[in-house]
Amino acid sequence: MKHLKKHLLLVAFGLLANLANAQAPRELPYKAGWTTDLEDWQVVDNKYASKTWKWKTAETLTITDSKRANDDWLISPAIDCSGKGTKKVVFNTGWNKAQSSNITLYYSLNYTGDVEQADWVLMDENIIPDTHPFGFKSASYMLYSKKLKLNAPKLHFAIRYQAHNDAGESQNEIRIRRFKVIGK
Image (cartoon, rainbow, N blue to C red; front, side, top):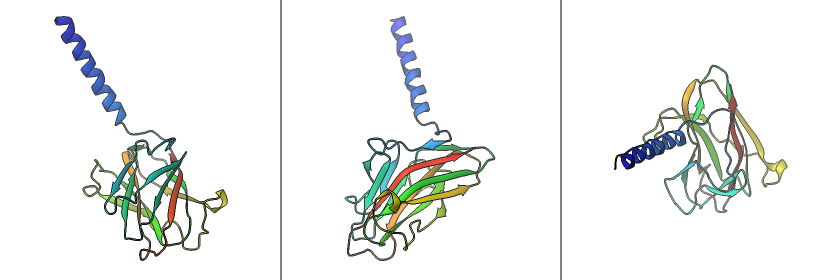
């Protein structure tokens, strides 16, 4: 009986250690894998759950307009952005048919799983300019890059999709590819 208690205690400590490691902030450089799914990114649908962020293909996520005023968040795992050096968020983005929608980039220092309770700092809005060409050929994707001077051991990034102007008559697909955070 004594050995069983010891064994169960060791198993419990092992499970707690694994849980702590699973929630530890990712180190830089960070690259979203998105190999076969959203991995450890969280999706928050505030409206119209049928139109949400989804995995498309390796390294690529997508969302499609619903012809309504969607409000959908795509939130990264915690990333360790500590240190004095400049960090940089880099990804490719594009849209398929029309400039009816757009994406905005935020970060939060206090996100704990509830998008409404966190303080979100706007990094950039209307990331895809109206003049950007349509289509998903490699040349049609826009390279987005934003520098960030911040020393934070636990930071979450969020890409928020909302209708750019009015909800459009035609549905538009938006894609995010090869998301990464680099720096010192």
